[in-house]
Length: 354
Image 1: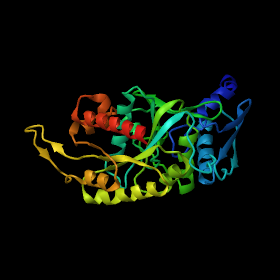
Image 2: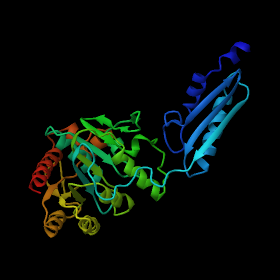
Image 3: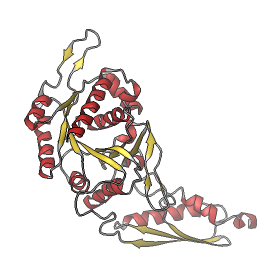
């Protein structure tokens, strides 16, 4: 027994605590930097964890799970887990006094829609890939904190790391730099965050990620005109916004609200992309306007901006996204990929003319 107890040491305790996950996240408490100190005396150990949170349930859960994990070690004696709780600062990432550029990023483009279900993330992913194919440096920031899609669409389960000065390193795949809440959560874990926390998380993704030198940073905004959208438009200098819609009137009604929001903060609308415009039957090549026709063109004309693309709906695009390889990367010659390539060309031309 003496040899078993003598095996208790700091590295063993730290590796055991690395199995304890922060509530709601897939990352463990060690990688989050919560372990302040570890003291070992024979078979006894005292661990001090430092947690910054305003939710009393989180320290309680972490303490219980940490004690449970450590007490399961063979030959262990008395285990003490102390929690030092600090209240979060009113603003984890200082909000700039007005829209300011992101260091190293030449142009920030917001991809927005008035409602969900129009394929906004599909547009963001494939447009970013199409821009990258021109030789540009491109990144995607998934600003949809509650319903992140970018991690799934690029098929990555990699976890972001941090530098010594607390900068988050984005995930790099398919020639793009990516950041998404989806990289931090389990597949089934919801992002349970209140409004102020969502705002701070969005600011961290924009300001504390080491984006490096980029020609374009694509922001995949959540649908609607809520806190996250306001955080972005009020804090970041945007080169412009692209509105995504489907042809039917119910989608157009909501996209007008998004256009109005950008207009009020003097963000130019670069154009409209009509997604799921039509379906080409593979059997006879006949076109079917499943969701109506011409809605995107009419809205673009009303706003006085270009119609950047009419993206058809097809099975291959859906399958590619589910596999984690967006269609522009999976099949660059498909009609959908060609439509995104043409849209990227128009986006570059529109930016050059501004």
